[in-house]
Image (cartoon, rainbow over all chains, first blue to last red; front, side, top):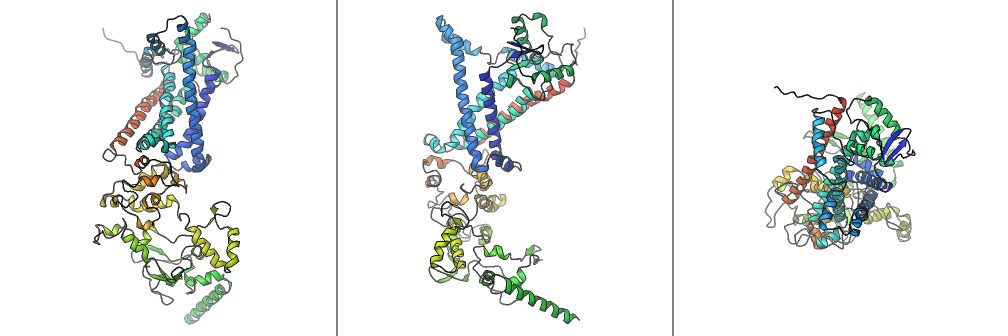
Length: 286
Length: 353
């Protein structure tokens, strides 16, 4: 769980498989936005230039559909990946022990690491207290904070809405065999408006939290390395950080929570940025 | 002295005319037998009209010679001009018989048939009882839709591409000896095998009236038709100059009819009539496998609660979702940025005992 590099600790966040899924998702979203927005905002001055980069009206729609298909395939793969992991890791052992039941399945699903819970609500309340200067303690996030969960569930809503509406518009002749013609009007509204929401959400909110906030700027590297620096673990996932450090037998090295008197913030940021750009190859103490 | 200068000017002009006569191509001389270009070739030939509008009288010869009216002599349309210099010319009547012979009937050519078509169309100035329509002045006249279009020849020899096929011309020359005739005939035919204007131009032309709020209100039209077309994929693709995409005329004109025979969507004979419009989408060049349901797609949808309540509230949901999601998150973002400037400051609330 913890990797050492030049005396600094880095905490495991995601597997290579998950990182590849994320890179495919990010690439698809960026290409889909770049090939879709010039059509949504076709009257804008920048639109023809951007569209012509992707081959204009004759090629860009083909690029858009291709990456749309990749994204839908990725979503289906992720559902299978998720189901398989839950089945192999949690359901199968219960079945072997003959303890599996519908109630346990619901409980098991509700307690998955990415499911929203009461802790998230407490963290949101704590965050607002912190943002309005009512406390100097940031929320002590778990392995996945409410922001992580928001970022995860947003595509879970967005990809089916965009994928389904896109497929309807693409295959309008087939779709209107079963559905009324007005469905294309609804598909266009859903596709266009949900795409704008997704693009703004990802490029403003998500990128701010993972790349542009002052403690990470100019770029977070966890999406490539799969490991998060100790400083960012303390800042965003303190509760989880403490648990991991205790499990690793490193209680004596646990840093105080964010906002406690310690090193100068500017110095910490400089150290952190220089470390996160280095390759991961250190030893793993636990 | 003044008379000498006048003589100098006339002599100079005569030399210019002579030089033009000597060095101009035979093609230009053939079109301009009245020698109108003697004056109208000058790009600055213009004046302020009686209504205060600037009027340009310059004729670009090379452009005109590639237009569909290149074969028509100037006096063929400007029939009131009998001498040079001439008095202010009257407005051209597009329905007159001009000085060319229509080859199939060997009669003098006229656009009169177009007027007959138009008088029975949705754009007629009179109703079916031949009574003037209300706001008949809003109905289009030839020049409201037409300019003097240029030829757009196509080559089909090995592949379809813009321009003239030299290989095809080689076949023409076997029988036809005059290149001028071959070019004109080739241009005449191939220009008519595809739309002379692209969908964007067509939509803009129709939009001059159909997007005019005053005209839309006066004639109680359902929507700003070209604006709503522009919000569909067809309209957006047209704005990117896609020529394959359907424009207003592709859907609103009955197949095999002239655009001048366009009928109202309320007319049972119209292809846009509710029971006929399935054929629009199912056209072999568009969506041949479509069921009639596809034609129920609302091309001219206005996003308001009165016209399209379901679509309006559906869109409102997404607008609310976008605002409801992003505004709080961006608020948190900006508060976070601000908080990072003062990480150690806290408001301490002390209660009085």
